[in-house]
Length: 466
Ligand code: 5GP
Ligand code: SF4
Ligand code: MG
Image (cartoon, rainbow, N blue to C red; front, top):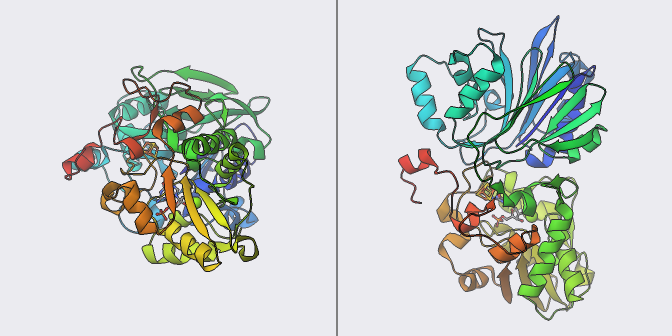
């Protein structure tokens, strides 16, 4: 998901809409905006679909007045069950004794089932099926006298990954979990106006200046044009999601001081060194494989070519919720550039193989177009484990790499060769020259390693084996 907030500008909700539009790649299912105005109080709107189709209408935006606003774009993660209802769309808003608050959450709370059970037993009335709603109820029950203190109370009970953007009547608040799994950045919009965003690309769109990241375990509170920093959690080694670098974030964003594009290009360079192959052209599976394919081509000297053309009017395939739509999705979204492929030995570079659906379809399309050979090069290690921290991976059995060796996957996909970047190669590409430190891994890489930095307690209770 993507979160965004703005304080200190007129019609703040319009800025939030623009920010969310720039974060649309983080969630395309639905979006929501809450604003506050001293006269009209809190207002909110939630809609299914793209930001641009909803939060551009003057009739809707007029209902979201005020200089303080937050928003959220959603895609359902492994924590959510069944079809999303409108009531599950964030931000969540609640009135309680200190005047209420709204929150937008990116990540996944791994003890949400237990918390929800406890809260319901104690009388909380839940409105949604979302794990994130727990935070509002925990805040409402806290005995602290200030909303930020209540938020700290609440978040100390929460396990898992969270980057939260929240607002009260007067404050914009941003928090990252102690491991800093999901991103969150602070931007300045001019005198006394500030923004919080999942990624820097959304600061660019509103002309805000990137100031710094909210640090892992940090809470920033912005009021009257001032930013104060708090440390509600015990310090620990951070574990940022390495998959944000590989796929999730936009290539024009800066993560941990690194250009996402440059990291992805470097992944391609590493791949070309680790898994070279003789071929005529290097083609990305667009858009997610593009920077890595450029790096692969530069390092190998094999020409880069756009062998697959993407229809720009389709979303990301994996966000489509059902298998059937996902299957069709590949053809709706990608088409082979036949004239270029015929008779060629093709290296195809993609970011990841999850269920293998995309890769199989693409291989078929490429061979149909007359390719002589197809070699897959994948910009992440095999995805063998589900993510419990906010990225939508299916159950373990549906992950190809959970039950197949690399050679079995190659056979299953029907290609001439298949190679994944090594975990150390990936760490080198994100700037860790010495690779992964097994004693103190610098990133979360659980979907590749099975090394979960936070035990997914709800799932373990449900029978999940670590
Ligand atoms: P597959 O078709 O193998 O299930 O999915 C792989 C494709 O989905 C890749 O092209 C990749 O761009 C995209 N994808 C990237 N990240 C994820 C993720 O976290 N989960 C899922 N399910 N698909 C992803
Ligand atoms: Fe990121 Fe994978 Fe960790 Fe999930 S399990 S937070 S996708 S690295
Ligand atoms: Mg892709």
